[in-house]
Image (cartoon, rainbow, N blue to C red):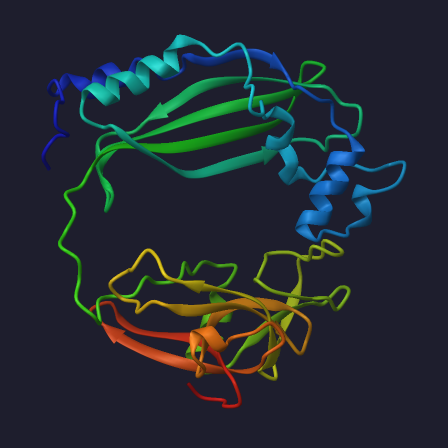
Length: 312
């Protein structure tokens, strides 16, 4: 595996590792204490109606952890030089591009309105050189420790890939490989249903609420248990966009992508087919169909929505 352009030699990784454990930001106070208006806005945006987040004994949703440490447009003071030095070293090695890859959070106790958080950030790890589809580079992980009155209440790990972009291949021909959906343990059942030409909706066995996209727990009551119901396939176009750019090789723009409201009440995103893209309208009745694609990545089945017909 070749090194990124400009890499000063095999000693680079050793130099990068010297930054592990160094502070990226010193202890800083959050700009706002935990507060009920922000919790309300979050829950409304997420559609989370759990009673745990309202009333006199309310707590903040755990997934809001990063909200309380964000600096906004003005940022935070307290950042050290170490992180900038690390990124500069990677720039010099030819790893001039960056992409956020994932984050991990750990919640040690609930946050409550009035809590004032402090946080500090360290450079936790720098990976060995990795080659990805984007290019060759290094994964850099920082860990932010969140505290209230000195007690650790949660951690937030943020990982980026700092890389030298791979040389682009010439544009593909029509029929090029289509991007694949990300299938994981939370949504595998949905895609198994699609492969069998069945549109399955998750149903909470605690309160009966239907939900889509698939989630590991109910955002209405918090119950982790669920089963499925098969959708009738009937729906209407709730909203839509017409895609013109970018012209990916496997797609043929312009085409319409709709937010479809199913008869059962949940909504999902899919292509609207069977009518010209400029004839799609909000309120248009549609019915699910399934399209089969074959390319060098294998067979892919996707749900689409067509006016008046069950198969696309």
